[in-house]
Image 1 (spheres, rainbow, N blue to C red):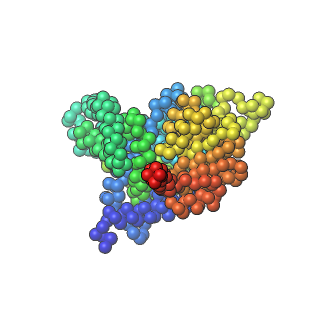
Image 2 (image 1 turned 90 degrees about the vertical axis):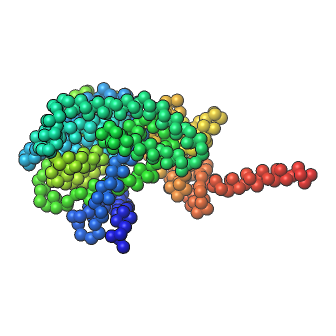
Length: 565
């Protein structure tokens, strides 16, 4: 019956294999993205066994691209970019130029046309935002000055790739190696300048519409939908806005789905409900992001590793050595310390989401050979696998520099070396999670004058809290380093407001081990979660249904008492 339900088969098998290999990758301390890509290879046409429908996978991947770019726009922070613009903007542009030229050089050696070499080089020049953020968060470096530069650098890269998505369809028709018919059509219609003017005119019209109309209509619409009180309708409204704008941008303005989705997310961030929008749509965005990586893996032909090993190694060398070395020397040229330069170099030693989008575009335009796709995918998988090792080396070099500088300054690190954020509070309350429950709890404690530290995984929320002077730690509270940064050994109480009771159990167990005298209160949704949290050391577990029932019974009892009297 599988041939009668290709969509269900593709999604079911894709999710299953991606889950298994993603879990295996995580066990080996690798990014789950590696597992998702390998899952695509296994269900693709180049390996034996089940073969997913490649056309359906491509359409599912397109939805993945839309939601991926929607998420990038939803978390795009002008503040992050402006804070490090003096190094991130020129540094990222210079590094992209160097890496693109290296890629074009390799393409020229292999006899590819300029258009194909340009896309190949651009695909190698941009790093994965997902891989970088996870790597920095795991190492408690996201809140350092070096981490801010790395994030700002990638924001510039992302913006540059958004521009590239606009320009490449036009450039592909005019550069040597572009589609002949399209090139002739472009020549008949006018010069490259005229084509670019038309393209930028359409993009400008779309951007103007989004900023003039979208900034007013979208937040207003979300506020009205939120007022209805239906979570389903609110989530549906967010998805309709994201996917609808992406589709409308492509149909009406000839703008790519990716660019339309990016601007939809960026405009949506203007709303006070942006955090709720991000939280409610995260599961769907994650699910389709997985399908995106699986569909990309389906395109990879593993035989390229056997047939063109030198080309694969050369591609990997550009990713790991070429662009990383360029980034290192660029950062040093701006007189930043070597530990910052090393961290930026390690951050860029991989390729990811935009690389795959560019490869897909190059294939659709007919300017990138299939070998180029396989080299980019092979280089991506290998670079993501090796990235933890690169970061480990960078961490050792950074630690060595800090020790040397600390020795020179009598035990105090110099001001130009930023350390992970640490709270100085003691006898305080730690609130884990700043969502709907955690926010109410934390705000009440703050109003009461309690010394409060908040742990939150959303960097934007953390930055907003710090802007108003509130002590906030970014990261996963299940990690010892994050609890240490929040001062758990000196804290009086710990309130775990994350919604997943079993995930909270790990946090409770770790906090209890670090501070046996800590009072821990957690929340749960199920009886099994209550037992799990208590078994891990929680002093009290509050389950929503129980508390609602208790208060309703109490209220009825209060009304009945006067009547009986």
